[in-house]
Length: 392
Image 1 (cartoon, helix red, strand yellow):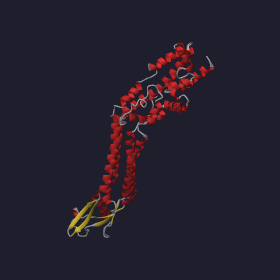
Image 2 (cartoon, one colour):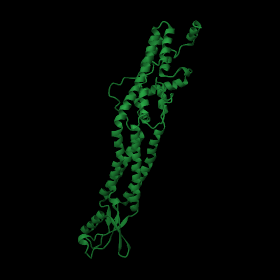
Image 3 (tube, helix red, strand yellow):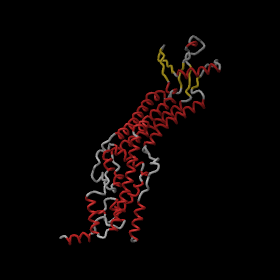
Image 4 (cartoon, helix red, strand yellow):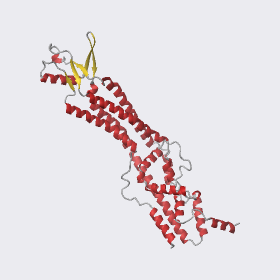
């Protein structure tokens, strides 16, 4: 065995990927990076603001301070604060004998509305986890495994070709068999390509992904409506007139009709309202961008894997409308690119293929590795000319 053939065998052995028969891709990412950011911000920010509201309430005591009459005792003043906080009604005199009441309940419901908002924003995440993740994980496991196996099959095929070439005494027989194998498409392994082509006709994953992001937009719009309709109405009102002449105190003459109270938690209320508007305003373009990514193919990922035999979705123009499950799978393959060991090897081969002077002879990784192993990717010209001379 010559030194050149030994070096070629070592090079091909090193190009083989390690076999994955242990734990199967435990670090698989089943959420896109931007979706994960949206989830943490949309769910986490209301919980953070809720903790801020509760912290202010626990540190400052009563969220309101009423200006009770001077003849009231400490216990009576505490009763006034408690009664006015329970009712949270602003009494306003519109005219003689006309009393108009305005509820300030958003101040009291602030922490609980934030908790409800966090739960509401978590519903699309649950929908994705239960409706899409099981099918998506199985698809990704199969596709990642098949892509790496297809690469390994190509390398082993070149190793086999090298051994046959070494054992073949007649170069004409070897190249004739090789040309026949190319024509009969023996080098192709179409299972994965056909599976991906089937995913173009499936729409369950993309429907779930669209529903998830659409629900986020709908819930964000509902948040805007809630803040605009209820919070804006009481946003600047720091003081209100409270009436405690109810029940046993209705006939007491020494109790004033209205007592002025001040909302000590107004600043927290304003901070929470403005922060919620700002946070969800920033999230809306991110959610829309996530939806627009479904309108185009990730052709760079596909172009790299065009180096594999029978993986010519691009060159055969098999890609149609991008709104299907295949496009969603490609987005998650890009997010799990670290799990695709073959991607780095094929990326290097693509760069080398673009810089080689024999581009027209190199279509797949089999052709390129054949060239690196010291074999011509096609029948040498001197053999072709000799064959033509023998058979004019």
